[in-house]
Every structure is written in structure tokens, then in C-alpha cells.
Length: 285
Image (tube, rainbow, N blue to C red):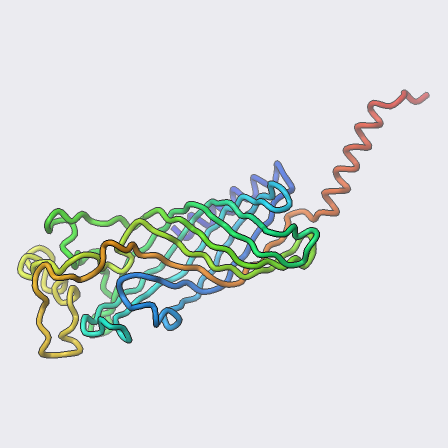
């Protein structure tokens, strides 16, 4: 999916420049984070991961732009250092996202050097949650159905490709009319509570073992790894909070540059105007 997004961005960006010179290309480098059922928000910095992105922007006017972005990163969460440490759950997942949206710049960057800006859009993203077992081996949580997804009490399998709503903003600095750098924070609101594979209540361990094996039971509740006296929680007791959907964040530094600089576009426009006037002028003998 990462390769698909990258090729799509390059193809679309190359094709669009054929028709207009109001395009910027944008590069992003920063970190990705997660908010959900694992952890209480105090360890977000510890769970930051490198992220990068590539985008194209079309300038509608001096303060409004249409965006098209591809972003890639990693998210993770853990019960360690949280109030649910005895549950001992953890996860990690790669994130691939493609989005389109609208950007509004508060101050005209052709008149001012610095300006805040805001953005809003819609995107699609791909994730796939994993964890490490007690031996340090990677296990795919989606395949283990730790809450009985697909067979328990009408719980459906969640989809690994989902919609998101990118919303955020930052500050931009105009190096020149054609080059800008900035800082951005973008929250991605999602419509799933399974980024971390945790959402509802504990399933019946007997049925879970019958359907998916004992490994799924040991991954559904891992308190025994930190406390040998811990027992599997009561069936139906709370494992996650389905009322709050999971989300993820991209934040970092952006750099954007115009495909063809403003001075060159102005000279092209002047040449076209001159050519038009010469055609409408008096004939030469």
C-alpha cells in the first residue's frame, strides 16, 4: 500500500503540473503517535516513532490551497506506566495514509513572512496491529481475534483499511515566494476502536480457545506475565472503551517548493500578453 500511494502521488502530481503552474510539492518529516485504550496519554512521547510524507498542493489563491498527501509512520501503545499496568497489553502497527483536503493560511505569505494555518480533509489509511509475546516473537493480533471478532456475540471482524478525518494546523515561514518551511500537528480522527485491537469486553476464554487456540487467550489478557497469581478476568468485564474511537497523530517539519517559480510564471504570462497584442495590432509592411 505504501508503494501504491507513492506511485499515485507522483503520477497525479506530474500530470497536474501539465495544466497549471500553481502547484507546490511538499515534504514532511516528523513523528507519529497514537491515542486509544492502551496507555493513559502520559507515555505518548515514549511511543513516538519516525514518520515521513509527500504531498502536492494547488494554490486556489494567495491564502487557500487544495492538498493531496501521502503519509507513512508507525504507532504503538502499552499498558506499562499506566493505571492498567496489570492488564499488560501492548501493540504496534505501521500506518499508511492517503488524504485530500483544504488548507487556509491566515496571513498572505506574499505580504508576510510568517503565518499560522489550518487544514481539514478526508483520508484513507491502512493499519495492522501486532504485539510481541513473552518470548519476543511478533504475533499478528488481527488474526488472533482476541475479543472474539467474527464469532462472539455478534462482534464483526474489523477492517484494516479505514477512513480518517485529518484536522490540524501549524505555522509556516516564507523563505521566498516559492519556498516555505513550517511546523504542523495533524490529528487523525478515525471511525474504528481497533487500532490497538482493544475495544469492548473480555470474551469467554473457553470459546476463544476452541475457535482460535490458546494463544488468543494468553494475548487477550496478559496479566499473568507480570503477576503469576493473576487470573483471566470475569467474562463480559470491561477490556476497552468502545465509546471513544482510537486516533493517531502526525507532527513535524514540512518543506514545500513551487514547481515553477513565481518570476518565471510572470514572464510566461507577460510573453503571452505581448503575443496576443501583436496579433491584434496593425499589420506590418
